[in-house]
Image 1 (cartoon, protein in one colour):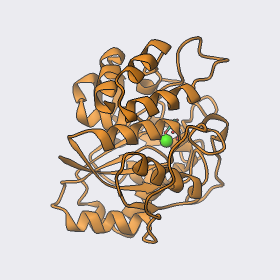
Image 2 (tube, rainbow, N blue to C red):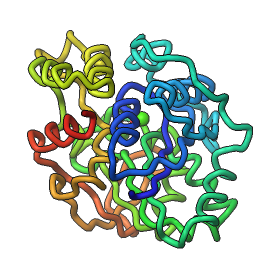
Image 3 (tube, rainbow, N blue to C red):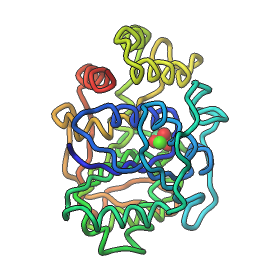
Length: 294
Ligand code: RIB
Ligand code: CA
């Protein structure tokens, strides 16, 4: 079992990633740390607890940043709905969110686990991880690997023409994370826009009869933007992150030197050596997701 911390702003695609990780026999989800992003922190924290409860798991939920380090917050409620999960029915959390904050909880887990044994998966803005790096650098240096959904390298952005939501929401935090010398793999829009579902795939998820797969079909259907995607869903951004560690062969990961433009939130070539997934085998990835959810 690979121990993982999932930092997240659930969010419909976050929810599918979390259901996948909780259901996957090869992953031990130590905690869900939450950040504002798609929707406010109270709602992302509540949703993290709902997803754990849905899977019958008392995974600790530690709330983190309600706003970016320096700028004002934007949100994506237009995509994720006013409950953040597209109105899909999930139970209430079984246990209340912890009153220990995300950064303190991450540092405590890192101190208590063997050095470099924990993988941090980030599915939202990077404010919590940036806070850990600046407030608990010793603990941050014990992180094994980080896999982050974020950025757009050659792809157009989804906030303006160059920026991607998770990065631009807190570009200063992203800059801190990029420069921290972590073993960081970025999963940008260059990969995630290639990963979508169609109606046949939703039917295949439902046919498994497994609750994580059925709920994911409901989430994708809620996420589907009928106006723009004839038959195909919006990109399944965040599920690419846990899948990259359970099925790395499905992704095309390259070594690149990148930087964050802290004014615009755009990613450009620069001086931070990162691994970047620039593509994936979408059909193989859909099978990995279906198997992991069922
Ligand atoms: O740009 C896509 C990212 O922004 C995803 O993580 C989605 O959940 C939103 O947070
Ligand atoms: Ca997200």
